[in-house]
Image (cartoon, rainbow, N blue to C red; front, top):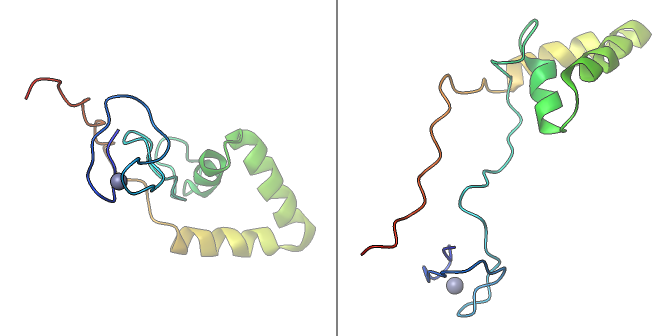
Length: 104
Ligand SMILES: [Zn+2]
């Protein structure tokens, strides 16, 4: 663990920094970002990206979206907007940083 505020390092898992009291974040956990999926795409990866973001099944997300399209056409508009607005997932996922060695 590593305090983002004061830079104090902790050997064990702590939730708050003893020195400055800031909430600790696990270095491996990345903030979720709404992005078009490259690995799970049928048209533009919008549904796949949403499914990933909401931890949902991508098929269920597509069905929900399709229902929105059929109901009033808003789903189609929303899809096109999401297509334009959402960034695409990076091509190659960078390997997570290795745990810092104890030596040194
Ligand atoms: Zn701190």
